[in-house]
View (cartoon, rainbow, N blue to C red):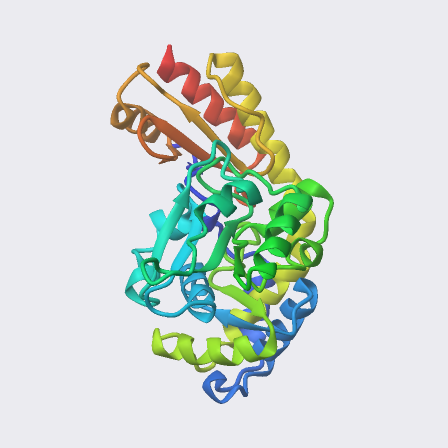
Length: 340
């Protein structure tokens, strides 16, 4: 039987041999007392790379976004984000459940907000309206196909928001993909946002974990919110050791994932699908009326190819460390067989 080509997400990557070795040898301590030396190094290094005063390690990106929103809002406030944002579609309504806030969405074609679109959604501060307190951006944008914010657009949103005393949280789960695609450092991308979350366990290949970064006062509060959400951890250096390798070494190879995504896209275009060339590592194409989605997934599975839905009749392929060029070619052959 042929091996499985898993294109469902870059969360399915397995830790590298170097990560496993580092995990086995990690120096550890109790992080609730902030005494884990390996985790302390990871947090310091993440803050340095992001250009922020401090950072904290979290078990998941969802927790990072939840805490990021909580830092910048009060119960009853409104948060602006894209209509297909991870914050609203994939995080179990934590903005409402934990922060007591309502999300006001902006409908975009590519997941990229502009200040003009955001400005129209900001609620005036009157006795009749819930105030807008935070703008949430997603870079890269998952459900729009890994699209990347132009830096000047992101900067303008931050500058104009701050003029109105609004905060900006960046869901940068795949911010290192954005940096690779644009040739811009992650520190420059996140320079003007008030908080930023990124995942170690997606494109960077660590087995567990995400980071939240911002100013020191906010990160001290974030540590308390993390504890409230059950994220207080003990000898977590075994995970931080893998995270350090992910942070230092894995960004260097992300261009390979982007090349493989472009290979998939060009092959799908030749098969007859109408899709844009991806900017990063996410490829989304639409089956439309070619065949039922479940039938397509079943046919892929029979050929040991895995994928996910991007909503409706849209299919998502995600390239990552455990997917080779040959794997992508195999996936294309499978799609062509199924469609024909």
